[in-house]
Length: 226
Ligand code: CTP
Ligand code: MG
Image 1 (cartoon, rainbow, N blue to C red):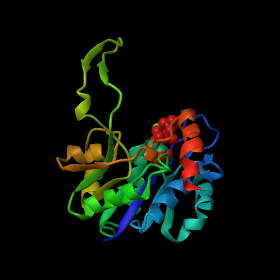
Image 2: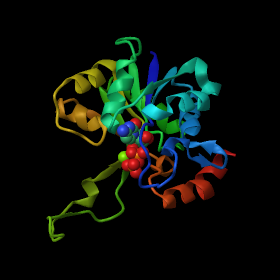
Image 3: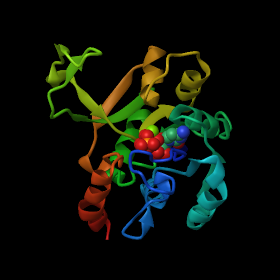
Image 4: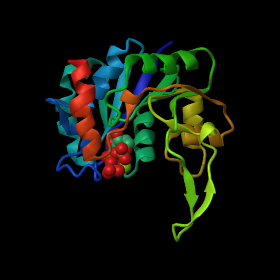
């Protein structure tokens, strides 16, 4: 079974506030982009990677990924995450791969074991698989005035990570249907009525969004890989 990983990396990183796109931000001398792509290829279950780059940084992303060029392609991404995923998926010939992963460049420290668990779950027959962790905060619903209207049952909540894995057919069906916007790819697949299986995620797969997250990556995550 062949596996391709789509890496949406076309975001600007506004919450991080860096002058370059977030994927090019370095942690201990290695960019988030290079870390995410090498993590996927080193997992030994991913055959090829397609990266969605900001339109004005395509050439720079190609240069950054030169060490992986035999198994890595760079396409121009879109205005939001899902259009970046869609554009990358369109560059992959239908049926060329059995399993398609979608993995945020911002989750640059995802352990190989999690990548393998997601792929194994789809290989075993699941239409879709996502890594999740229990939610440790109590989660409230608020109205426009900031008044709490409900408290969620924390025991039933999970925080969702990437890589998310899908059969080629299911992910293409999700992206060709007219569905409500979703903040992750599984959210689209759920709207198709397909079963999405959860596997245990990992704290190291945290999404690097803010300067605080970057400091955690510098101090805790990168040293583990050195
Ligand atoms: N992404 C993308 N195309 C976009 C927007 C986001 O490929 N138009 C990617 C980002 O590069 C990132 C992932 O989607 O790898 C998750 O998005 P997020 O963490 O929000 O990154 P940014 O959008 O870059 O950050 P911000 O929202 O703070 O600007
Ligand atoms: Mg964003």
